[in-house]
Image 1 (cartoon, rainbow, N blue to C red):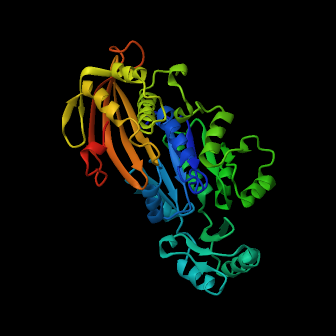
Image 2: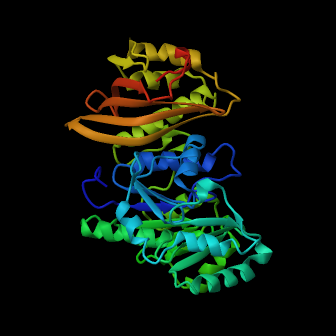
Amino acid sequence: MDRLNGPPRLMIVSDLDFTMFDHEDPENLSLLQFNALWEAYYRHDSLLVYSTGRSPRIYKQLRNEKPLLTPDITIMSVGTEIAYGEPMVPDYDWEQRLNLNWDRDIITQETAKFPQLIPQSDTEQRPHKVSFFLEKPNSLEVIKALSESLEKHKLDVKIIYSHGTALDVLPKSADKGQALAYLQRRFKANGRVPLSSLVCGDSGNDAELFTVPDVFGVMVGNAQEELLQWCAENARNNPNIIHSTERCASGIIQAIGKFSFGPNVSPRDIKDWGKCRVNVLSPGYEVVKFYLLYERWRRAEVENSDQILQNLKSSFYPLGTFVHPSGTEQPMSKCEDMMKRLYGDKQGKQYCIWLDRVSTSQIGSDAWLVKFDKWESTGEERHCCLTTVLLNTKQAEEGFTWMHIHQTWLDGMETKHRTVWFL
């Protein structure tokens, strides 16, 4: 929240597995569409919140495997843990609230009496979450008996069953919805309540998100029957909750358009930028658009034409400088020659680029400083550098002129071969 000057224009609170990203989409197409939309139009004045059943460890593992953006807030372990920003600073006040009438030892003892409950891995057993696998045919009987057993110990707990396989025992005051309500109270105390909030989910452990007051909601097109049934029973007449026709992140984008929160056409869906004009001069949109063109150029998805190279050349200030992450410098005028040599070198490969943490600051009447993490992946190989770009409008007939580019490797994300990385 500290990076925003006022209340967020939009807060998106999204589950991860089969909501923000699709396990059945090996190229992460819908996720990359969302990434480009968010960084181009929303990052500068909005909040991105992940709300996942994953523990911190396997959440971080997922971040290393998928092109997920850095969220402002992460709600983990089915609402029992909250962390802030890139360093994931824990919210200890929230954890203290969950200790009331919670006794993990008793819960462990009682659940051990049910052979149908298969403990999940140690990484998923958290201070305020005890997790199991449970086959669907046994679920109703086991959940009823377990609830009665725990009630005898006067514990304030709840049982959440999701995806037809996963059972979690949590404090009664903890779930994804109550974690979000807690955050909203903090926002209100600081005068930073988001102007609009959109919650997004696909399974039973997301249901509580849709109960939070004053939120809009989208059940993605691939939502589980358990969530659809809950909605039919509890939110049938709520026009602010919809079931999208698109899967996962594409369903989130669809909801952004349905509720008129702002732009809902991802830059990745624009095939000809020359025919598509953006109403607002946006440094964020400029850098996203440039790197999408760069990706398409290297994948040979655009024509190898003098016109594209001329447009690129006109975007770069001839006397500007590009500082490679290795520390070497070269004039911007040489970038055109390098681009010529790189055409189609990634054709037929699973190659993509995405930008993360785009931040912009106007440092003059016609100058902007833009900072972001620029990621490239080819197959399972990933590299990333912190990129700073100086943009100017005075030097351009329309749009921006790139005056200077400076890149430095993020720790552990460098490439061994200098020629592999350009811009």
